[in-house]
Image 1 (cartoon, helix red, strand yellow):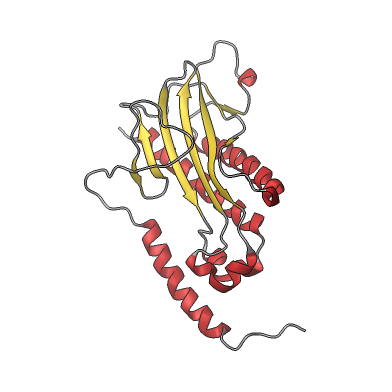
Image 2: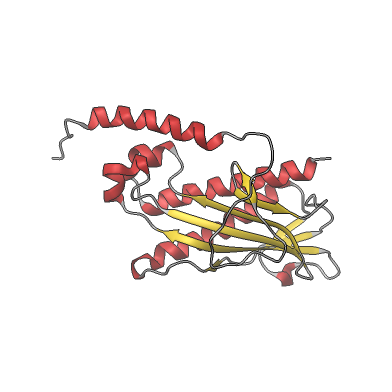
Length: 224
């Protein structure tokens, strides 16, 4: 029978306090001048695009005057993978890629800004004006429960996803670019990550990314 470690109550208290700090830092968004984000990625930014800091999507760029309107449809193809490939992450990697596509489709549909959100260009009605949201997984780690058990609150062993998204019109002209990184963002992942699966925590992070994308697009769509 498994017995509890005598220091676990103390660790749990410290973890809870740390999670509150993490939560407070993660959700804050100050005003003032936009801060440029330096990005290192295997996926180059389109010419003339510079990402600026955003409290939830980390890095964003929007073409002047673009409000996510005027399109009949948006196509969300399967994400590309341009991160480090590890032989022990094949199944988890495939699950993450599918999860990213699903989350982006749900996010865009939930915005109400587009009449149709599909996964293939041949699903767009003839003559419809459409855009394409291309996503690429530029950083990936499946994580490890052992490291999370001992130091997950500090980020050890947490899964990692970093997604770059490019929204372009049918001619390939950039309209919106974002970059978002998630790594065990929930309190549950930080406090109890050693008892949760890598896939479960990463799915949670992907859903969180989708929600933040949805909220940004909705806010931008309604801005005057």
